[in-house]
Each structure stands twice: as structure tokens, then as C-alpha cells.
Image (cartoon, rainbow, N blue to C red; front, top):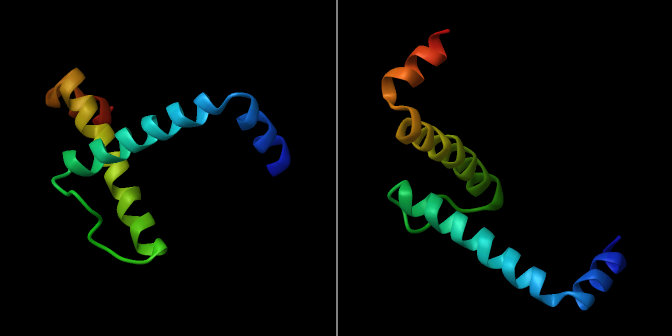
Length: 78
């Protein structure tokens, strides 16, 4: 599987460059939007947990911006 991935990336190296930029931008936006410029915890387990809390919070924040708080609460209660 890794050989196939390497072969694909050798054919189209630009794809990985774009993917890296996209992922890094999202992670930076998530952390900065939550008021942090770096993770508060250490070790992969703790950082994973912290990120798992940031992602739903980021998504809820986006839904609140699109729908508004009142319709979101109504949708949750339904």
C-alpha cells in the first residue's frame, strides 16, 4: 500500500503539497479560533483528546454563525 502511495505521489507531487497546506490551515484555524496557538497537553493521547474536543466545538461555532443560536437550540431540542 505504501509503495502504491509513493508511486502516486511521484507522479503528482503537487497533490501532497496542496494537501499539506489544506490540513495545516485547518488545524491552525481550529486552534487559533479556540484561543490557543499551541496544544495545552503533551503526549499523543492527550493531544488527541484535546483535538477531539476542539473539532466539535469548532463545528458548533460554525453552525451558530450560519443558523444562529436560537434555531440551533430548537434543532437540538427536537
